[in-house]
Image (cartoon, rainbow, N blue to C red):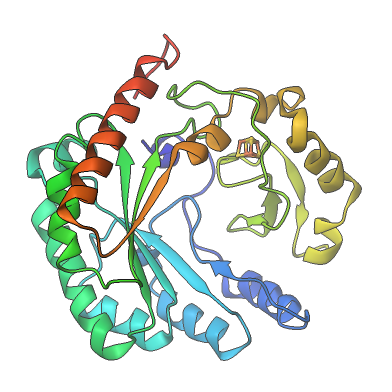
Length: 297
Ligand code: SF4
């Protein structure tokens, strides 16, 4: 499901000096960018995460987001993130079936993660009510088998017209896995997004885990120069309608996976829950039937 186990890159957090360079530059822009403080890894392993969020929010950063598996999101960590001003927490919980969950998320405890999620939601409501919580489900026939129960359960915990449930499709992670069919949909990754690795290297996108495409490094070149560089512009053009010409992108299915993703908001009626659950379950079954023969997850 995740290439963290096969990456050849060092598994380390970004140095303060690197983050400082990024913050110092972007805070001078007329509109600083939103920041997602994670890459290929679990952000709560970073002991300085709350301080980093606080630093970004002390400037003009409009939105700071993290995505976590929730295993380390205990009361202390939750309080730290919320007090620091976190804007969006994406948290993965594939299903409410302990056995299925622990088969997918090897080494994690379903009970602990669920307890952490419910604890975070309670603390959010008192410490930082504006923080948005988005539960994420990576769709697979096993994870969506009882999707209706899952939606109904979290409808009782997530805040109406504020939080969300995201059903996303498993993608190739830069061709490391075989999942849905790849196609030729345009990819907007380089339009308004920069992926910065822990050493300051700007790579193509979040699935370019090995920095196959290296656009430069924030320690040598400003982000604005990189964003407007000849190389980025050249790749950006190809992502519109010729991504099959790029070795990294030719077999990638992220745009296709995104096009099938679903975001559910609340409240939902019982009929809406049943109808969405059955639509998504049918779609996942059909998409996986069409997936390439080789590989698999
Ligand atoms: S097509 Fe895939 S690999 Fe290429 S930029 Fe988009 S997400 Fe990244």
